[in-house]
Length: 358
Image (cartoon, rainbow, N blue to C red; front, side, top):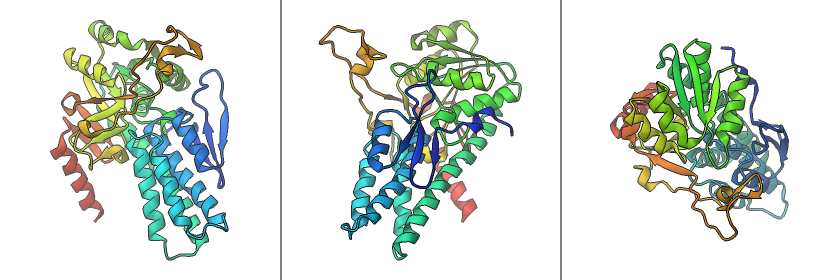
């Protein structure tokens, strides 16, 4: 299908370095950073140059290649595999809540383990091929997500979304935003509202920018207007992505998702969470076990580098919250759609897929 967002990827691989679109500067400036080392990749992930769980995972996969190239080239490092595994662990710790990061690094570790008996050059080639495959799989998953999610929407749907879940957050056209764009192409979208998403304003800076490029009608609202929007503007759907889905269906996503989900249930607004299967963490039982990343207080107390709170003011700045599975009407993955997700239904879909590929 034709998709204007598909021409835009925030992560590109060039064999010996990564190019990352610096999302901190959008929409005012489009600047690309060249990432030549695993340390530079870790810094870029921590500093939100790249964000969105799938895009972080893709970046981490390529960073594993950079680390391997560097370690293998160091003549003094005879046991470079062990040093490389340390690099991998540092990558995982860069953003602990986003499960795609851990998944991608673990997949790269398994790739090298499988090639352990090969010569070094073959090992490096295998790692690079696997990282490219992880990227390609996300592109394909995005396309499938868009189709499955858009099928759930009715004509003239009015949609609220939170944070940014488009091409900027993934390797392809996006998760939740990919669904919205596809539904618009199918003639099903009347209006989209985007939460600004404090404190980094991913909604107003990034989501609105992407929807404008795709010619999808969009209005930005402040996060605290979501309840009144649902009460007065006949909203049909709340559609979001996630950084992690636990085994019981709980949703770890950008802070503010939980309150939007609660209000949606109060006003009869249907809810949809859209993720690639790599975001589903079968090994974590529930949201109670998810580590919630806390970031610097200055992100809340300042705006665009200017202090807005008094000197000495303190702030609590969690990046994510947990939405209980009971508030989710549909979980959309490339493997299929789960209505009213719970542990039994998630595990059933996993087993169904395993049987199909056996």
